[in-house]
Image (cartoon, rainbow, N blue to C red; front, side):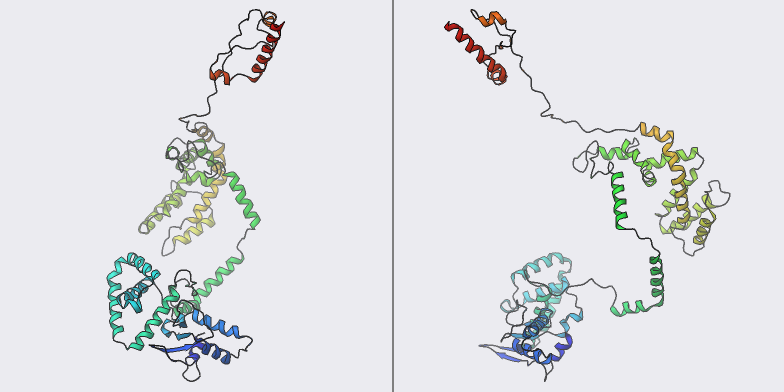
Length: 484
């Protein structure tokens, strides 16, 4: 694209650039869109049938900031008419990789606000952007204002024509990199590079980096890769295993601290009296047991009974070494080696010869690291996991701790609405009526006897429908008897 632009700017064979006269002013160094499209068709041998290709190419030049419209700066489209356009200064080309940061944009807006408002006035979205930048860059406000004032002084010393061209080119640059709301930003800003391209190329050519890359690729060939189906199945098994301990799926007791303000759950987690769920979590994996400080203490007590407590102490010492400051790493390594790995030491751990050789190689390095004892730590971890950990889960100690564990319950409600049963009214016995045949025959005990009730509204509402029907039948029988 830049080669074509350079050919367009050629004095003889390029696009004709001239000053355009208007009613009251003269616009310098401009060309029309029709001239540019005609030049592209002639130079690239584009036929009249493919006229749209030349117009599309000219529009791409405009959208990427190599040319810009003079009259209608909001529309970045090249038209095949007398619309005026101008070439952008090579300093603002995308290949120059100018960083359009907030400080430079704030200087540009501040400079325009200091000049004539009729020619250089800020639009509404630019005024809002300037206010935001002033708040963001309040610590650099003096620097921004001083830079803007210096640029205004330099602009006053230029000729009128050069000043107009430079101002239009700068505004076109920011129109592309900071477009108005609703317009598309055609230039994508990639990730910032910490090195220059030449430095990055020099680093790639180095032989050491190539050798490291070859070694990495060789290791990648032998790397074990798991199928997606197996990975999904393992995730499913783990989700089912930890379902009761997952507080996103199972509400914790006594209450959910993420919803309520009750801290009872956190207090139970930090207390020395564990819950049953916390102890059952130890049996899921050996890692879960080592994560819990209470589990480590119980496991250490069990190992002391089996005369193998040095294994857990060595593993914990290696874990503490990984978080030790660099200034104390050498002293900690010497202490651990003297206590656990020196032959004949009182707390010597049992490791094989290959593991011991790897540790000795790490100790001979000039710069000792926090991971010097990783081979021995991994060996001891596997030994405890396969031997001591299963026996701990079957021991009486673990069963006793599990039996004495707490079982938190949910909190009771303060207002137990809806749980109280409604009180049912007991109907009063029906008194005998004088001269009634039904009362003499049934004596209030037959199926046709009806309970006598009071005339209160509550009792009337709670009468059984069956009793009401029977009452109606009884009244009808009484009326029939009185007729006779």
